[in-house]
Amino acid sequence: MKFLAAFVVCVSLGVSACRSTAHAGASPDELVAVCRAQEAAWNARDVDGFMAEGYWDSPDMNFLSGGSWTKGYRPTLERYRASYAAADKEMGTLSFSELDPHLLSDDAGFVRGKWRLEFASKPPMWGLFTLIFRRFPEGWRIVSDHTSLGE
Image 1 (cartoon, helix red, strand yellow):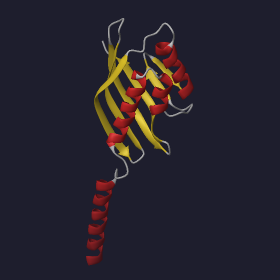
Image 2 (cartoon, helix red, strand yellow; image 1 turned 90 degrees about the horizontal axis):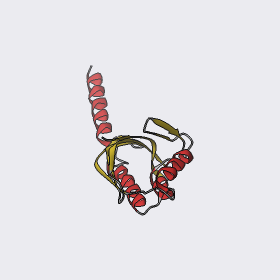
Image 3 (cartoon, one colour; image 1 turned 135 degrees about the vertical axis):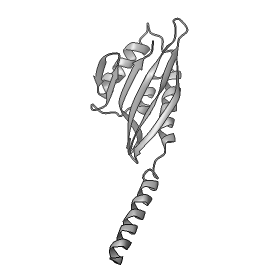
Image 4 (cartoon, helix red, strand yellow; image 1 turned 180 degrees about the vertical axis):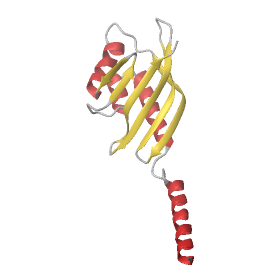
């Protein structure tokens, strides 16, 4: 009986230790850093850099916005280029706010937040987003982006 009680105590302590160190190898700040790097690339008028700073370069990456679902890194890049980097388009100045990062494990997490684009020639746009991240050898990458437009 004493053995069983000692075993239960050890298992309980082990589970508690696992809970306290579950995210020891990762920090929510790392997810925020990806968002800030994307913000900087966008504001440097670098759509390719914006994509490379954050998105997973895979046909399995997803971007959901404006009632459409774009599957894959390349199609998403082309969507951004057509919408913001074409000769007749204005990229505006991007800012992220109210970033709310959460780790699910050492290699998965998400960030919710608000985005805003300020333009010189038209009213600003804003909305909300949820970014799903996975950690790869090259770092944290967005595997799914669900962005909405505010009113």
